[in-house]
Amino acid sequence: MSAAMRSLMLVVPLITFAVGGALYVPPERSASDSNTGSEPALSSLPPLPSWAREDLPDFSGYQDTTEKKVAFFSFLYPRIVLANSRILIERDYLDSLANETALSKKEHTWLAAQSRRLRVEEEPGSPAQFALLRKRLDVIPPSLILAQAANESAWGTSRFALRGNNLFGQWCFSKGCGLVPLSRVEGASHEVASFPSPYHSVRAYIQNLNRHASYQGLRDTRLDDRESGDPLSGLALARGLVSYSERGEEYVDEIRSMIRYNNLEFYDIEFRKILSDRSPSHLKDLASASAEKTLLPGGSTRTSAEG
Image 1 (spheres, rainbow, N blue to C red):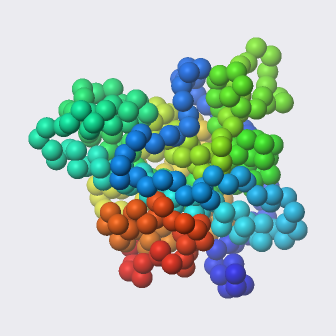
Image 2: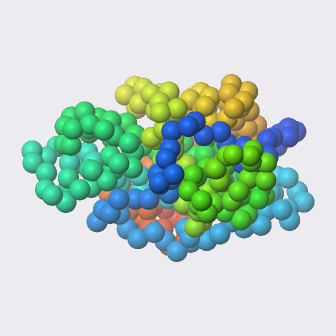
Image 3: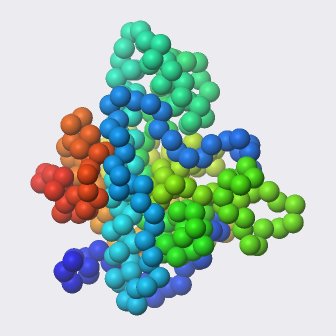
């Protein structure tokens, strides 16, 4: 990577950010609640590429801060594109069902699975169900994901990231579902979730923002931007993260500072460019990319058109 590209991608902050694993989860989930972000079966979704199942690399060996950040973002960004593109395939399928006069049993089953996953409790097949599913089945801007992952995982070096592929400090509530926090207070039962791969952590994090009542403000902002035709912005959506941490507004300010200082809006722009082609074939290519490097800025799947 050239020095010019590194300079474009990063403005190195002289700030110390919070150590990972400090996520506050508002009390809503039961012990049996799944937080894997799993995808309900859909024939138009290609199999997950093998590289998405790889574990987190060791980022602790980098001596140069800029190189460490570039490596972290370069590892994570393709997984964000992969997760978001697969969500867009599901979203397009949802739109196709909304235009049908009658749904098959298979289509009802898929709608029911998405409704359970995204906590939509509206009459099956009703306009209200489709409207709420469309609001919740949507992407998260890369800048926000990158900033929170860096913050919550201490740039991929936290215990929960290294041992559980957990980049966002997500909790779970079934015994053995993850790692027990060393500072867990007596009487508490939560664990910090373990995931098969960092990709699955990204997918579960997106699901968390898409369905938890505490992040309705984030989803409202995203819907407003969609309806007004404005590009989705991590800086704007960050306002809806007040409940993500017990530090509230201070945490939101920190995430927004990370986006600015690390020039992470660059990735939002690149993501819009790669999605300037929203055809089913292009989304399928993104969702099944055989090599993660093709999803990086400048990769072979990137279109030349502006988003």
